[in-house]
Length: 251
Image (tube, rainbow, N blue to C red; front, side, top):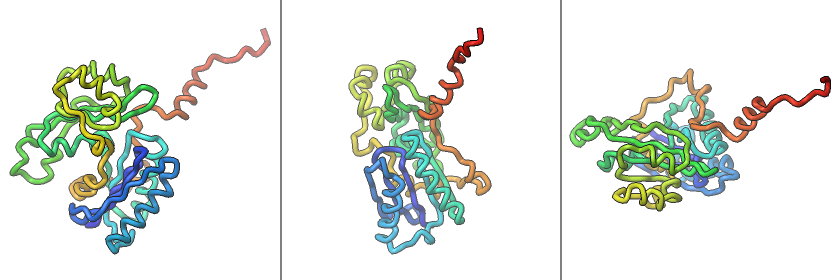
């Protein structure tokens, strides 16, 4: 199976191609204001480099968020377009995709932190379950026995770190890089992953996508991004509904 992976949740977007879990190539792009155009161009280059066309893609894997609201919608819309033409579709949220490779590398507890602007981070903590820790000689799918011990949420980095009862071994993501001094003060023994691993890896997603369950075709059209917090437009709408009525001058 040929799998195309897409991530437009961050300022640096990427797309990757794999065949039966073997990565064929990856293209990154960093024009967030035009992710839709850049994504299409990147996919064309990627497919051409492997002498394939979009008709050869049997499965599309997309990063569902959280991240850039506009970016996530662009990636999901592109994936839905392929799915409408008959391509299988799978997805993974960006926080888990950041943590999963470290869990594969035998780290037990990984905290993903994405810069969410406005002095907040999107964050969650993932832990390898006993099933995953026994997976060295188990079926490959057992690698995904990873659970969110702290579910994704948007919060100030200080409040989030203060809420953690147990120290993660690794912090990864743009939020972890931006707040590495705060992390070091709270958890001096923890590692902060290098900048090269601070955004979700579409190469990794492409390599595992054939093991993930496909979304039912009847649900693809109504699949929504993982936002964690309301978008700017939604917050403005809520504020307008909560604003007290203006005096009408009648008394």
